[in-house]
Length: 213
Image 1 (tube, rainbow, N blue to C red):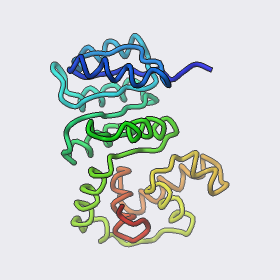
Image 2: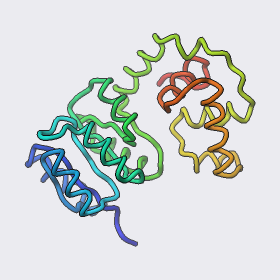
Image 3: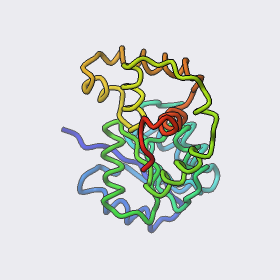
Image 4: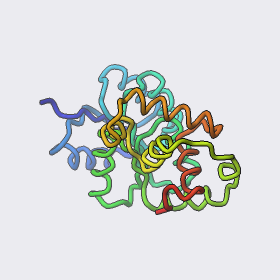
């Protein structure tokens, strides 16, 4: 079985070299780049499974590069590894399609877990960033003001989505088809007037469906 192919994008060459040595026992690191425009070119050629990307890069920042990568290849797994603990950056990264947002001062085990989660379709956000996002969500009244007209099944799907489970995992857990899970997701988003997964999490926390962690 072939190993997962990872492309690194960071303008600190030494860091990329160390990261490659760290990842290669488990993954195949197919290359590294130091600017956003080069990343787009190399990703098109190498077709990696995963891109580990920093936010602050020359030529094209990591957030915009990530958006373009996901537009070109929606199946690509995008993982941000950055020094920035700005929750707005984290939110933009997730909205752009990132599967994980990890801080460079995280423990190595957290980073590896983030990759493994992302490859299983489960999102990962650094705990301190998630807590800060939770605090912001709890101060935002918009989601909680919406009337709730959800079925029991929709509430089950909502809870598992808010907990970070993928549609396929929810399908297996609830013993319903993937297509049915997808239908419930879009029906409940329509009912709540929600367009983003992050807003689902906010709504679930406000309603006590999940607890802030």
